[in-house]
Structure formats: structure tokens, C-alpha cells
Image 1 (cartoon, rainbow, N blue to C red):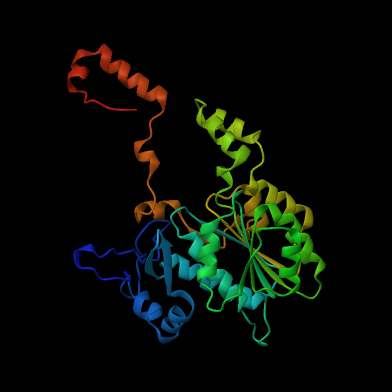
Image 2: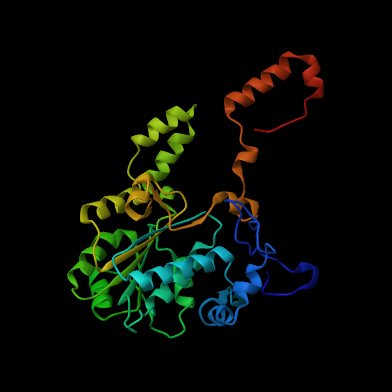
Length: 340
């Protein structure tokens, strides 16, 4: 699909359901593999939903120049939001959801669409399911991209309140019933404490924790892991590494347990086992599974991220190959120049 026709310069994005964790579409025993387009996407109710809740004109102003770009959801973004909204509408508050979406999934837009849909969600009795939606981002420096994305999706000014100063600002937003509140992970314990004190009100908390390995001690630990020689050493080092932001969230959640007035929507690309247990969906065999998937394999095959393993060679392997070439004249003649 594309939102702008420009002849040979037209840029098409894949709009496929995914096939066994990869790109493409699964076989359809009842017809064409692309039948979902006219059976689902182009159905009247679906078109109305796309126009009213998904399709968005994004504006960007830089260096005095203003550009506009029409945003249309990819298949996994639309299906994730639809499934989460349907389940929350039926089950109400008190649920936990784990959304495992790889890098390259367009997570900021997915979170923005979900936040606005949750803020206006009503049950069968026409009652609001959530009084406020709180979006938490994990970066130490406030995530301007996520903030701007959530704000741009609002149709009415004042729907989104950004908490970037102090706790009094947060409490005012919570007690005044702001529809969508955006804050940082550092205020996560304070936020959970505050909302637990507000009796008779329900909250949806969306946690963006995909960048937890990029900051502070976690970044230091990552560099240490990359310096080891074997996977066994890396596993041992990771076991004693400093806690990440994801660990801090898990510790906080485990200490509190489930709260009947709080629903958590956790977005992450690589969930730890504890994250799966706290936010995942229980399975009959006792394991836990994400509520919604967009795999790294699909992101790679669709061209949104690079497969780093395609160009990955351990130093030991590279050194041994170079040594064999140097010691064997026939190999040296056939070998091509290479770089590590």
C-alpha cells in the first residue's frame, strides 16, 4: 500500500498479515491469500474506522519548512489496536497485555493510536472503560518523538497532558481527569501510587520499554557483553548485570500485584521471562505468551530493519580464516580482500 502516487518514485509499504513469523500471507484454504483485503479491510465498517481512527495527516516543521505526510496503519498496527480495544472493552480494567513488536514496527504510531482509542472507549452500558490513559516512555531524556506523535493524533486541543516538570503537575492531571497523560519512566512508581489512591476511577497505563537497553548501566552492561568470547560467558555476565528499566518496572509490578482499576499495556521488542510472566497471557501449559506479535524476522524480511547476522563473524573465526589463507598459498591466490 501507499498513501502517495509519484510515478516511479512511489514508495510502497507491505500490508501483509505475516506468515509463520515472517513476511507475506498464509495460505487461504477457502480462496485467495489476499482475500482479507476485500473481506475485512475494504468492508464499510472498516473503511469508516480507518478514516475516523487511523488515517492521519502528520505535519513536520523544521528550519522554517513545513512538510505533510499521510499516515496509514500497517497491518500489524491496525490488528494490534483492534484486538486490544476489543478485549479491553469486553473485560474492562484490571488486565495486563504484552505487545511484542520488533524494532521497525512503527511502535510510536501504534501507541498513539491505542492511547486515543482507549481514551474514548465505552462498554456495552455506554460507560467509559478508562477515566484516563497514561503513556510512559523509558528514556532518561524525554522522548519528544513519542510525545509529538501522541499529541499530533489528538483531534481536540487539550486532550493530551505532558508531565515534564514535577509531581504536582502529575496530580493535577490525574485529579482533573485529563484524557491522555504522557510522562517518563522515572515517575512510574509515583504514578502507580497516585492512581491507586484514586478510588472509583480506572486507568490504562501504556508502557514503552523498548529502549531499556540503551541507557545508563544497561548500556555499560551491553558493551561488556560484546567483549566476551563465548555465548556462555555472555549469559553469565548478563545474569549479574545491573538491572535495566524493564527490571525496575517488573520489580514494581511484582511488589504490587494486579490492581482491579489498572490495565497495563506493555510494549517491548525483546521481553525477559519475568516480563512475560507479569504482562503476558497465561497458556494452558503454564507458560506465558504475548497478546500480540510483530516479529524481528518479519521486520527484516519486509525491509524495515537490517539482519545484522548476515555480516557477523566472531573475531576468532575471522582470525583463523585469515591465518589459513596466509599459511596456504593456493588459498591466498583465491581469497578476496575483506574487512572485519
